[in-house]
Image (cartoon, rainbow, N blue to C red; front, side, top):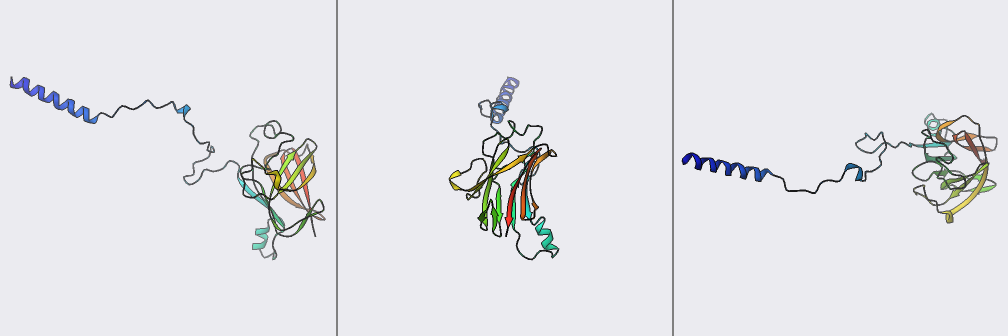
Length: 211
């Protein structure tokens, strides 16, 4: 009898131990595919901030102004600079793949493209005073409409056309060297500088006159 009693006590002790360790019932987790995950860049192995696949860049006029200033070759302020993010094609067609004719485009990726003017310039014979501006485009097959806008620090997908300051139609050429990454860069001209806008084989030149 003592053996039987001892066995019963042992079984009860084992049952209580198992009950204490048993986790409470939980609802079955939904499949991983049903959980909305943030769309991070593929190369986001940075523990502080995901690395953007459309890197931010800037172009100065005069070209490479900060380096020239560091070398003691520039004393006054620059004339202009453009700050933008650089999407790339990744095998896509530029039109009807990335862009659509007749629809506003932020001239890059992410935040709205910013044009900073440090000295007065002329755009299509209209004076542009020093300041910060947003620049976006409406591409067409034969020309692109470039728009100077006063709204700042915006996400570039939606433009406030009520704050447009000036529009200029610029011819666009095709058959140029194919560019994978969208590119904007200033090039000196006899009257000032052109802001070159290039992607795929398309090229437009926004003419600025410097007095």
